[in-house]
Image (cartoon, rainbow, N blue to C red; front, top):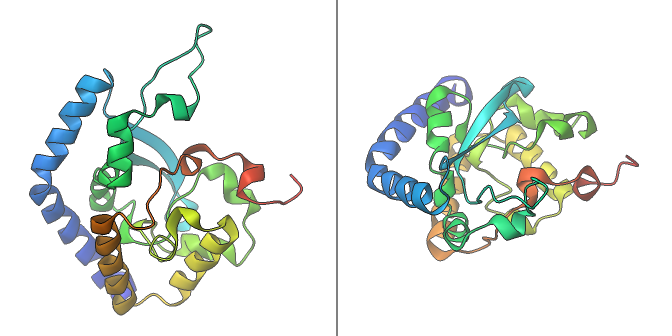
Length: 205
């Protein structure tokens, strides 16, 4: 009952009121990025969601579009601005994902959606992570976040799917709030955006 109906109702109502409450922060970050990056403040990227359905995730853009003399984008580390680092470390870059939650692409809590190119490399068990909507935060994020090995992240994702209850979601949300406020286990996760496959895991690719 919770997973099929109540969770979605809670997600929609929470995202709706969350966007209203956070609208001053949303607008402020939007304007600062518009001025400092001199480009679209939003970052869009295709990610697999429920049942591996592809959707476009929305985040605040923490990097500029600076290019080298040949017209190629500079390395991520050279394009991340000071303000970009700030919104990542404070998780403010995640706020636009509330729009994804409203649309039904995501949930407040669930496995973080990775890139579509990883789909062929999941084991049968790991594919269970796509039996639920991906989340803005998740079990792996409150148990190590970016400091976890990829295999451990996937293990935690499967654990979440197999043990999904409102109690578990509530605990994850509380831990997430605590970590965001204390900046605990937070780091700039460039690899989530475009990690080479050989970094994700060794599958003799």
